[in-house]
Length: 397
Image (cartoon, rainbow, N blue to C red; front, side):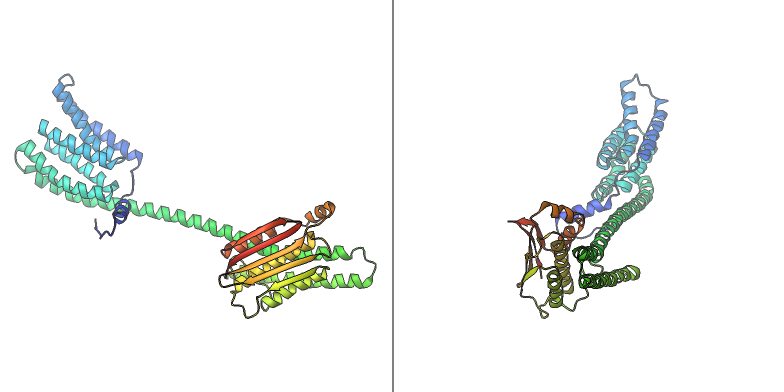
């Protein structure tokens, strides 16, 4: 046992706790209880239960041997029981050999499953034990040498077994923690993959569906040609981003941003905002953009990517749900501590239009917005406000 310096009571408590491997198997407890019963039967041959003194000797013998069994479940209690019963038994009978056997078994159990404080206490008390027992049994110190010969190897073996058990417990605990971490990482990876697939596939497919639907009843050939051209561009964008995501998954590279397996193919925040505005204007929305962000804004790539992903999702939702030809307000502001984002669109007036739009909804987009903001340590608020649908988010720079 190696003592180390303690700076506080918590250090001592941690050292004391970490030295113990806990209770032994119930089977060992049962075996030791049977051992105590067998050793007690030997005393029954020479004594009678009818004699009160003999009955007390038999009971004390049983308790002395059973103390090792108690130690496997309650080490401190077992140690105290052994000291009290063994000294009493030494005072009643001259049975040094039997006491040494109980002494060895109990001492081994204490060092196998006891705490550091118990082991230190046991070392002190059990060092004094042979002196007391020798004086009570033989009025000399004849048992001291025998106790030392037996006790030292027993302590070494018991301590080695205890450390091995402790190492097994720590290894099992560590394996359990690693398994929990692995499950947590897998869950995060699934969430990230779901967000990216939604951003790459769902948004683009929704846009293509809306473009096709808006031109479906047109008799003008120009409208159909424009729709096919736009659908072609949208499908090409989705294919490029999907390939980038697959490359990340195949090469086991780390995602470029928190929770993002792909990055938007824009040169910066300004080009990304312009892309969002252009897309909305193609669907006859009027966009009021207020932003103090620029190419020179000192924002990390993950923050820029999260902003554009959120605006992309808000734009797709506006195309699906917002009142046609209405005004959409986009607000972006950066100060010293955080970036604030607001996207406001008009709610649809007709319930039938809203129900038809629900066919294109899965609810994953809003969940993805909240997750992206949370990954950056921010907060998001999404919902209707005075006949307007408002998405607000803020996260530290």
